[in-house]
Every structure is written in C-alpha cells, then in structure tokens.
Image (cartoon, rainbow, N blue to C red):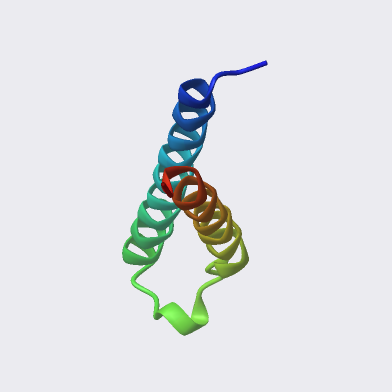
Length: 70
C-alpha cells in the first residue's frame, strides 16, 4: 500500500504531465497554424484533445485538493 506522500507525489506528477502535454499540443498547433498562415477557424485545430487534457488536469487538481484538506 502506498503512503500518503507517495500518492500525493504521484498525483502531482500526473498533474505536471497533463500540463506539459497540454502545452506541447498547443505549441504544436500554433506552430502549425503560423506556418500555414491560415486562420484559426479554417484549420483543423483539435480542441477535443486540449479539452481531454484540461479535464484530466482539473480532475487531478480536485484529487490533490481533497488530499490537502486538513
């Protein structure tokens, strides 16, 4: 069984990973749009992927918040 510290560390790492994935996705899509010099509404920007990462990050934050409550 994992200790509270290990669980907290794992959740913080998951949160960090979710943020990093979201940033990478956004950076790639922005670079793609800039290189094509196209408007955002005419590109195939995959907001569903961003939404998934944001939802996972929000879930991780809620879990972390519940763990940090006294």
